[in-house]
Amino acid sequence: MSGTLALTEQLIARASVTPDDQHCQRILTERLSTLGFDCETIESHGVTNLWAVKRGTSSGDGKLLVFAGHTDVVPTGPLEQWTSPPFEPTHRDGKLYGRGAADMKTSLAAFVVASEEFVAAHAAHRGSIAFLITSDEEGPATDGTIKVVQALKERGERLDYCIVGEPTSSATLGDMVKNGRRGSMSGKLIVKGIQGHIAYPHLAKNPLHVLAPALAELVAERWDDGNEYFPPTTWQVSNLHSGTGASNVIPGHADLLFNFRFSTASTVEGLQKRVHAILDRHGLEYDLQWSVSGLPFLTPRGDLSEALARAIVDETGVTTELSTTGGTSDGRFIAQICEQVVEFGPPNGSIHKIDEHIDVAFIEPLKNVYRRVLEQLVA
Image: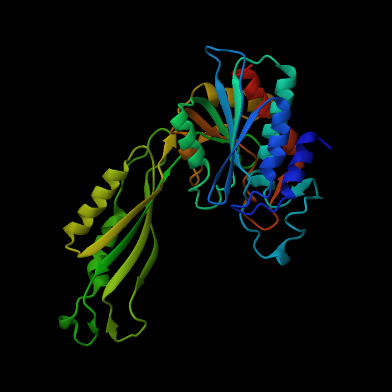
């Protein structure tokens, strides 16, 4: 059994359902401390975070490369639907099954073993290596990576490169790298009307009727055209509620929840202003509350993405694609203090599902890709 596979299984066996780390970070700390990493635990409201650094020999232009990820996993769902227990790593047909196998305990194990192999071969490496690990990525993400980033920002810590080990590959290992993510902004709209008897509409005001033309315009609006890296911004309704449940009552209000997934081609302020303009133009009486769960981030092609692309093709023969598709990730926080942030990990077809798994054949190549990046950027 390879060292990467063994460590992956050790981590899967920990039922670290968010935000409970279940001492996964202690396992990582023991391995990293042996390599000479200075390991610091940062706790916040039941969330465990790890910041570990091994400084290089250069006092000048040596770069700092950060491996970032999370030890927490999503809940298992119905246990009876799993073919094997989710926290008992199990092999079937060349695959390793268990919650976190793809998202993202294999990446964590690959980070560690890649670092071990790199340090053994390059004891006097010029650049520095760090780990930023949280147990609050699958949850609200309010006490995890963002807290570590705040602490590092206050210390004036400079991060040159960051690889987030999220499962980004699609059909095969290495076919996709994320070099950015869209932002996410939600709105809670309450359109006010006047409740009344449905037989006397002149004595009431139906909020759904006044909302409908504005809603049609919001749906049809083209918010931007995207750019080289991002698709156009999208606006989607997620919930619409109104009425008392009775068929003879005009409702007094209509509640609408919606979400923007937006790129660097738009701004929070610009999108909000345009929504208000549409609502006001249609004469709606309303309240609208906004919440931004993540800003977009983008790493244009550069040293990190090129090094990762070379490592992938050298190890797997696959020519990778840069993409910004998918939801948000902790990369949005790290990008505040790091100019080059990319995400790369195993195929994501089984993440968050019953019988989550990874092809065992991908585990060693994943580790080797990470090691090859270290050899290019911090040796």
